[in-house]
Length: 498
Ligand code: ADP
Image 1 (cartoon, rainbow, N blue to C red):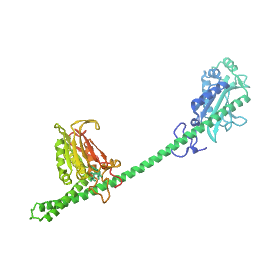
Image 2: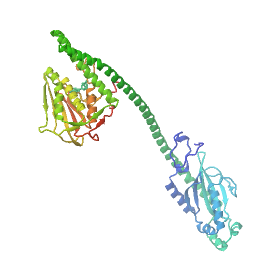
Image 3: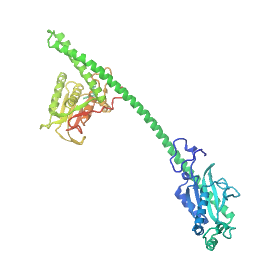
Image 4: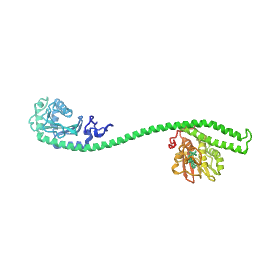
């Protein structure tokens, strides 16, 4: 395991390159707490200082040996302190080569490299053992200071320190145990064995952890890439949707003007303004007016939807009498209901209710669209009922408001379609041979307008039995005051259609 770039100790793995190619540091592989305990107990056992440093010279574990009194006494002199500091710096960070008085010791170092013996000016000695692992230099163990067997008296280098009480120094030195070369070698081998065992275990768990982390990072990178791809697609879809809306808006606008003329002239013909018509001609003209009106409604819906999708619709709030609004909406579907032989009922609150804040035209369109659907999807002989509730606290909205329900005994809506029918251009039956006309826009418009008022629309239904559309609205739309409110464009256009 070798690399050009050392891993930053303790930092998260970098993005590039696998953990298997990166060099781990001592900090990565050793658990500092338990490793510190082990080194401390070895220091106590041998009564010799043991310091473990990483490749940058940072101390990872430090056990003081039994030399404290002697070294502490020498360090009471300024010269002693200065020389001690210089020596410790050399031991911790200096080159692992026989310079500045260090000598290569005979035999091989248990953890690779060469053992360096480093004499101290006090007569004590150190041994520096490099730590190599799978060919990488990871740090060093500084073993000492200890008093070598041959040390009998203070050396000249200590005697020359200014202000040192030599007798006291001799006394303290005499109390230090002597270490033979053989014993030092055995102690070092022992330290090396313990360190090697800890490194082997630490490396395994480090690699496992890092591989796990890498797998997670890889997954995260994949997710980020997919996310970016989705965002791009979303952007394109939005753009395509905008173009579609703008195209539909333009075409509808262009169709509406000539169509209005066709209906207008047909009405003039039917009223006999340019002469009487025979019954057959009259029937043809009435058919032109009826189909023309259906087409006009469709074009108006497309225009409304394209305006909503372009984010151009604003609600103009004013005080509205909802009872009156419901009743007048009903009149617009009565002719069609009567033609089909439907019973239409309206249920209003017993007491007159105060006015509410709403956009009269849009709210009326909501009720008309729901009623028109109820009439359209209910076979002859069926029932349609519109109910308006009294004002009261609305659980769904958490504010005071009212409900409008439009119920029919029509064909019903299958459960799996009940969310989708509110998407624009979605119809339960969209086959070319479908029985009912329409473009699948009415409910999408209802939903946008209701939500623009701060309300909600939902449906319950049973196939073959009928449906009930429920609109819950606040008495006063939130934050709207009584000025115009913006309707945010919907985001749930039926994706299968466009
Ligand atoms: P359109 O009525 O023009 O098709 P809408 O958006 O108003 O479009 O309705 C979407 C679809 O929801 C309809 O095509 C129909 O399948 C279903 N739907 C709406 N209202 C009813 C209802 N009262 N009963 C049964 N199905 C309904």
